[in-house]
Length: 407
Ligand code: ATP
Ligand code: MG
Image (tube, rainbow, N blue to C red; front, side, top):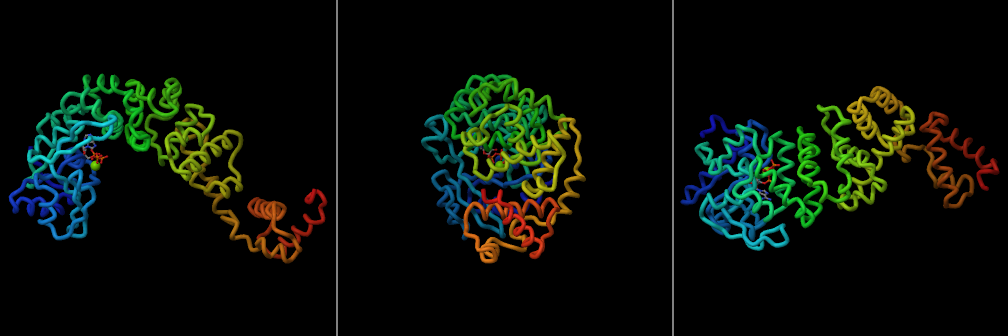
């Protein structure tokens, strides 16, 4: 098959293929971008594979960076872009089901394509726009089928992350998994426990954020993969519920929104505890926690200016769109109105600070002063106190004569 047009990203990189060829070697575009071009999807990264060894590539191009030479990858800087150029390789002797103990550089394109996970990820594209398809990937693309290259069971046994990648491709491409590949996924799902949780997180996150996420999640349940993911072991029913309770066309807007919804569906007790198992960042945990708090607030009442101030309008909008997807009432306008009417957006916008209060009223630093500042903040946000020095001083004076304040 010959492509009629090449996307600009490939056109820009064509001189790299030609230059490598001039030196007597082979070079191709490979990986997901070739699949995406054939599907007429936008592409992200242009990966190049070659039979030239890394040292040979470094002689051909004046500007290179060693980014993974032991895996055969050299970064070539060309025309203000960076390209990963990787030597054809095979992988051997998988340790702990996760990484090959050895990679061997080889001179044969076929050997390199054979180690790739799925037939639709195993294309090569030469500088004449011809697609090299050694494993029936074009037919699989046509039939919207995801099929492992070679013996599916062996491939998942070698590297169980491929199971998660497969489910993620179901979600991004909307494909159906071929029968043998599917049963091999199920049979090897337990090996996912050996894979680093950070890598599994990336794949599950991509699955949730892709267009056909319901299809991907359904497949994840059918393959029993959830049994081997942190905190999801006993959640089959609730995961199914998550599929049923959101509108079929709904797309998560952020990862945090997706995970917040997941955690609510499976009724997680400790949000932090669950997300720690997935080794997510503190910032991610905090945002997910806020989304869940705000979701529960909104079940009780409509939003207030305090909510917009405390959590920020983005979190509130995300909660509203989750509600919409669940068929609950929404009021987006209220959020924008409350936000536009906010008198201050953070503490530093209050015209009086702690130091001024301490010197004016001979207060010492400590929890009481903190409480006073918090009260001022709440009153200003609630529209009960003007953000002006004189009014704030009057407020403080009233509070200081109030004995209960010091008790
Ligand atoms: P995306 O569009 O999300 O970037 P991709 O198919 O390009 O998807 P990458 O993770 O960028 O996936 O990997 C590039 C290529 O490397 C894949 O298309 C596949 O050929 C190969 N590959 C990546 N990870 C694996 C793996 N675990 N096992 C086998 N082949 C892999
Ligand atoms: Mg890629």
